[in-house]
Amino acid sequence: MAGPCFGWDMSDGAGKPPVVIVKEQTNVTSGTDVQEKLISASDVFANLLKPTFGPKGLDKMMYKTDGNTAVTNDGAKIVSELLVKHPAAKMLVSMCQSQEEACGDGVTTTMLLCGALLQESQTLLRKGLHPLTIIGGYRKSMISAISMLDDIATPLSDERLIGVAETAMIGKGAEASLELLSRIVVKTLKITSENTDYPAAEHVSMFKSGKGSLSDSKVISGVALRRRIPLDGLPNDIRDAKIAIVGGDLKIRSMTRDAQIKIASPEELDSFVDAERERKEHIANAILGTGASVVLCGGEVDKDVLHTLADRGVVAISELDEVDLRNAAEATSSTIIDSIMDASADNLGSFGSFVWERNESTEMVEDIIRIDDCPSPALVTIEVGGDGKEATEEAIRGIHDSLRATSLAMSEKAVLPGGGASHSMIAHHVRSEMESEPGRERIAMEAFARAMETIPAVLAENSGQNPLDKVLKLRSEARIGNCMGIDRDGEITLPEGVWHPKSVISGSLETATETAISMLRIDQVVSARGD
Image (cartoon, rainbow, N blue to C red; front, side):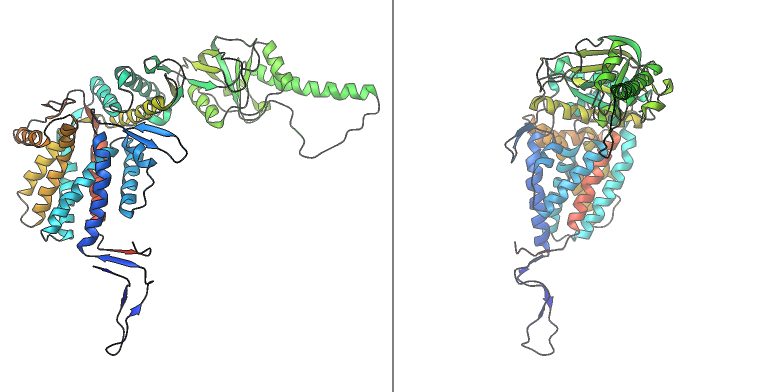
């Protein structure tokens, strides 16, 4: 029902107009029309991401308002680039962002599940089922499904951990070097887990080399920086030495107020110049006294101090970002020095090698500095090969998703089968639980089970197979206890090498269900714009 006003008839007698409390152009939609509109919006959104799902998923080209383009099939990237205005679409965007922030993977799965749940509910609403009955059935199904995931979970092994890393990267621009990159992801997390409380993607930095291809990617047990080396004669290839990281400047402090110094004789001028030189030497000696061979500085380095250090074989690099300093400190186990006069050997970190690669001498090109082979790095770097443009950016997104998923698997010590196998088993479990439900909610539970089968159906469809045939076959396998899934060719098989962390599956399921329930609870939409 739609109307131009929203109010109550508070008149004492007949013929008096009702009291209007909103503007005349306000449009009010009530009843089943509300769910119809919300479900239609979710269907459009789900169909947008549906072709990108799985190893045979296709890409989307995003043409931005600033003229730049991005080619990707990463659900999180696509959703973040869309300028949505529909209120239901905004709810779905929030849902995807929640899944991305929590797990780093499973955004497209979450969108497909939510869209399928809403599509199933639309059929039930047209048959006269009350929204609260559907909500009750969905929530019971979700709780039951999450509780049974432990039954199909598999203990983590090195081979399955590699499978988790590969699964999260499939279809995201990194497949050309999938085996290499998946092993790099696992290696970086294992290195950092030995020196931190828990493995996490936040302990891994990305560095674009701008050269070669993805197959040239490698792990740096430390950091890589882009900064111009100030002097050509500075030492290169320093081995097994100490590093100092200074947060401020390596120069004499500038006065905050203007001042004039009156010099009456050449002797006074000489004494003034000597005093300034002594202060600079004092700064340089403070660095040299620590025994550091490399100094990373967040501020400026005085030229005289730079040359004094260079004469003693010490490399000083200035004006580094705060992030670079923090990463270098974590990689080398250093303490960032606030005041150089308080510096001591206890503040220093260690590294195995320090090398810099001179690029062409132009104002725009910076040198590449690598601090590698750190003894106990809390942060490591993945140097990603390639031209550094769109293809490399897409690969980096895939690597980051893989890092998030792999770290979750390492923390949980268990994984779930992919390829739609987990969702097929969930559907079978919910159907079994449905048999003990006496009320109408069992109808919603059956709809929930059908929605779970959307995942293997889309995988089969994107692989060129008939989705109905594959879903029926999976139902038959699930009845006899076989946990089967869809492989990259669309055939039904054991899900070898395709694994997900348990929290990715459970988080996706819970987020999609709760979002669908939130939409079903809306019974009226009041639009002040009149649309």
